[in-house]
Amino acid sequence: MKKLIEGIIDFRKNSLDKYRNKFSKLASQHSPDALFVACCDSRVVPNVFASSDPGDLFVLRNIGNLIPPYDHNPQGNHQIDPSVSAAIEFSLLNLEVKDIVVCGHSECGAMHTILENKSNHACCQLPELNKWLEYANSSYQRFKNNPLTDSLLSPCDLLSQVNVLQQLDNLKTYPQVAQRLQTNQLTIHGWWFDLATANVFHYDQSQEKFVLIDH
Ligand SMILES: [Zn+2]
Image 1 (cartoon, rainbow, N blue to C red):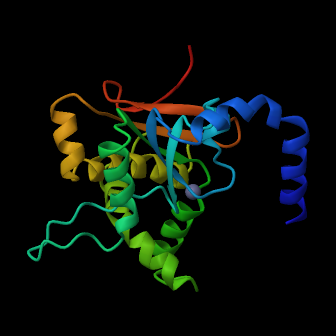
Image 2 (tube, rainbow, N blue to C red):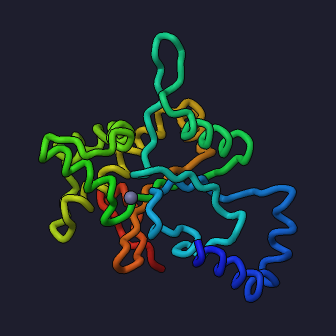
């Protein structure tokens, strides 16, 4: 906690003046450009690698940047975890974002855990985590059936990239997303952040691979 408290003191001393007007304007309303879905990993820092300011991104974070598919079950109940659907609903209906980015990353602990669980046939001692990671089963199947071909990447990183594509497909199962995609009111993007180089890649449909975002 010491580091955090010192960080707040440092921010007040050295940066607050720069942001004072910005925060003052944002206090009553915000109009972010995009819903940004990222992993909880502390090394994934969208505001830093996308040089974005407070108010620019509406961020949803969870382990493995997963979007459980929208569940049309016979009872009409929603999926098990409503926090994801709530964030999607709010960002589209209230904030009227025009873009959704799903961003995976290299060396993702969630992807490591999935691969370990599958190879050892034994679950680690984190039952809640394993329950959550069941939402990535479809990503694992997709990875096994049709992996992206990039010999430079480890299985973990390849699974992470395939996982991004699967989450984009899961996003499309949400009625508000599907309807906006159909009417071109919304664009969805698959991004992948490489920790070691801080490079960000986007999925290029025509090349069927992740391509470096550069000028
Ligand atoms: Zn991760």
